[in-house]
Structure formats: C-alpha cells, structure tokens
Amino acid sequence: MTTCLNCGVQAPDGISHCPACGTPARPPVADDVQTNKGMAVLAYILFFVPLITGAHKNSPYVRYHTNQGTVLFLTAVGWGILYAILTAVITAMLFNPATWTYSGLGLTGVITMILGLLWLIPAALCVLGIVHAATGKTKPLPVIGRFNIVK
Image (cartoon, rainbow, N blue to C red; front, side):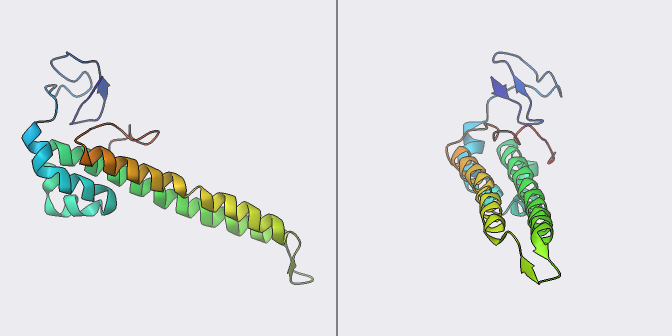
C-alpha cells in the first residue's frame, strides 16, 4: 500500500494516480525526504513552524507530517478539554456541600489517575510520528492518521 502525499489516502502499489484526488502516485523523492527530515520531525513538536515558514507548501514530505502533527495536536487539545470536563463532573458528583467534604475522595483520585494515564496515548503517537519522520516514512498514525487538515 502506498500513501498519497497529497491527500493521505491509502492506495494499492503500482497505480499511476491516486484514486481519491488524482495526484500522480509516486514514492517520496529521496532528496525531499533527506532535505526536509528536520522540518518533518519539528512538525510533531511544534506543528505550526512548518505552517508559518511555508515549508509544507514546498515539500510533500513536510506537508504530510505537518498534517499528522496538526491532527495530533488537535486530538490532544480535545482530550484536554474532555479530561477537564470529566474530572470536574466527577468531583462535583462526589462533593457534599452540606459538610464541605468529598464522599469518594479515593474514588475521585483513582478515576482522575486513570484519565490522566490516558495522556500517554498522544505522547506515544507523538513519538511514533517523530520516528516515522526521522526514518523517511509516510505511514499514518494509528486511529487519527486518516484525517487530512493541511492541504
């Protein structure tokens, strides 16, 4: 399977054009990959740098990894918002305003710790993306890699 560098769709090997967007199918150019590995890695750490510098417009390799880094960032922000809401709701449910105490302090701590451990998922995806960018691969991140934001 080949990943289209323009739209990110998975297509079978040996096709002449991407079935989704019509872009000529080609593997990443070795010079593009070697020249832009640093910017592709940076796309996972500070996704906006390739966007601000315009590097994503000049290199399909950087564009691909900038898209992956942007989707990962938005996923992490979404998880942060959901985490804050869930911990606030759980805390509010266990708070007894009559006595100003928490009726399930141990339970709140356990649930908050479990939700906090889920932050390891975006961190692991970030490391995986950096490894892909540093080794010259255009392999999508699990679950979130199929979304295309940066064009």
